[in-house]
Length: 172
Length: 91
Image 1 (spheres, helix red, strand yellow):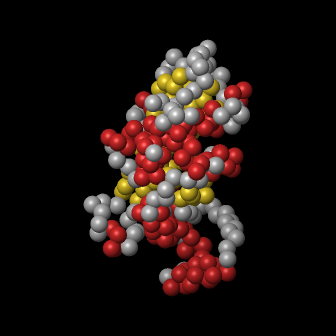
Image 2: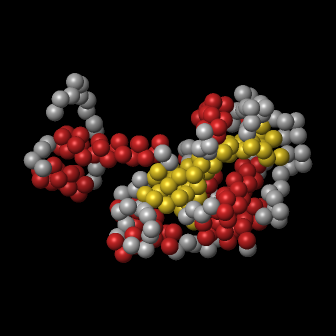
Image 3: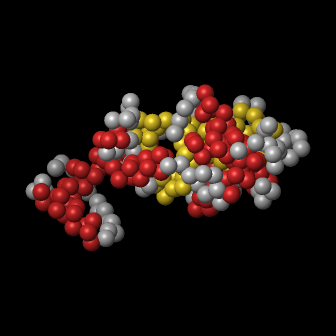
């Protein structure tokens, strides 16, 4: 079963055909990423951006996922000796935004659910240890904190969700 | 040190942190400015370069804290279970 969106809405991977120049979320960094960088970086195979389209074809939201790594090179020896290497894979939810006129309808929550569901699908084929949620500002952080994601030590604007917790969310 | 221009860096620190930075600089027989330039700037450069390659750099105690959290993953909370239902298309 897939995440349920309002009738006529659908999620697609970003292509040149999507009308992204008019997207306005109220956060210029979020808009700029979609308009200027998302497709370039996607073409380099460094991130994937998926857009939420209304039945009119208008972009009402988007999110970007990227693979990354956490360096665990300074763990105590008794921990590192259990590991084949110390650069461990993560997925980062780098961007998530909703078009201004569609905000306040719960679409952000559904798009977050879609992004995490994608992460779960990925994790069944390519392993990683956690999803990292990048918070652009306090408002974004407040939104993610509603779902009890924990903070990465030393990075107040990065939250995380361990794979095992995500797996339980998806299967129970 | 050959620097063409210099500027001031102000940082608000707790007394213990300030003391240990001073102590580390003294051990090297250099001033605090040189300590920042020689030790902290390369660390900052490493973090910036790592972030460009999507590698998250943490200090030793931060790595341990994160590692321990991952070894004992929490059970989904009520809010997470609700989000899970949406992920599964059940709500």
